[in-house]
Image (cartoon, rainbow, N blue to C red; front, side, top):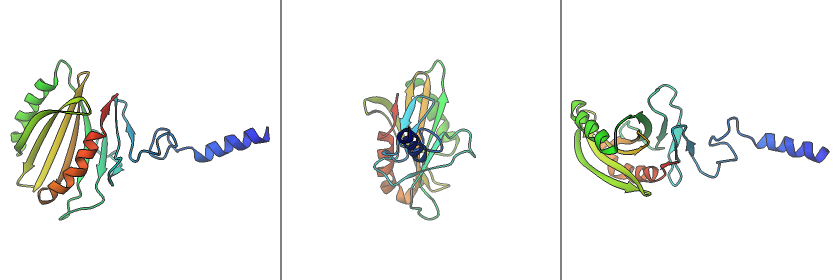
Length: 174
């Protein structure tokens, strides 16, 4: 009986404050691992990026930040989900692409692609006013769009996008 109590006590010491978080023994082998109630998982595995608290923005589900900043801009990687009833990836992107110019962005590249056998859409855009460049990858499943956005200072984007591409590869619909 004493052995059983000791075992239970040791398990409590090893428990995370919240199950299925990065401090949980369940997932601690994958840094920055996130399980969404929207039906996807993502992690910052194979990068030095860290998850940050996003309670201040209701639209952003998750944000990772680079440990290095450049000219006062810390690169970030955000994930948001858009419920899109009665849409496909193609119709969703047609509507989204028309909105970028309205917000002052210039589209540099846009194309459909597959990441881990998942159909997605890539958009590279920039804003000359803010000197920011962005890469968005949009995944679409069951009338939900997962919009993954990598942001960086324009002069540093080539280096930043290498780690962002790893984050994109770490996304999976369940």
